[in-house]
Length: 199
Image (cartoon, rainbow, N blue to C red; front, side):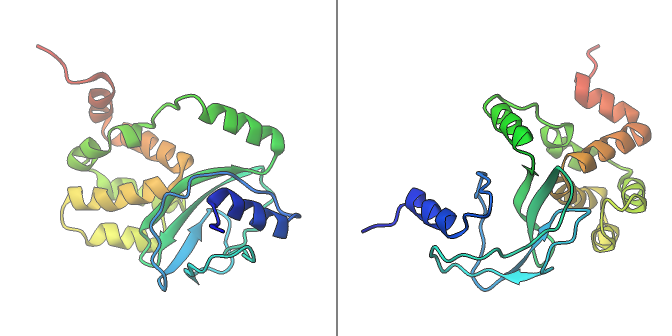
């Protein structure tokens, strides 16, 4: 008999009755044999890096374990080069918050400034290294990401790398980027939010 996705999930849940199942998007492309890592700052997942195995069956065991006392965490998956392969998802540990989140997902969410203006930010942000310096000082990007940004020769290429970090860093990191950009390039923020001035 063909094993449908729903039947498969039920079988996995029965094998792990002490665990809580979080329904979320699985839209990502993972390559068997390649290594991936979970990102959930400021918490450190165990192990730091794991090889993807695509053998299916109900006897699944967690690939990554995160110890946290927080009520919610933002989790994403990166490949071994630090590129995002599964966009950040917020996971609520409290049932009341989970219900509110699921209810909110049914209505269209407001698009963040970074996501809404991504293409224009890549083309028009000129103070990339200043922004990267601020984010590094607040430990919102890693030394590795900072070095990647620094080695690029043009602001556009620097911003492409920074945008990838922002997308995997979650809401707080995007908010901090917005605050810094508003300080460094206030006219750009105004132009993007209100549209170009008409003469």
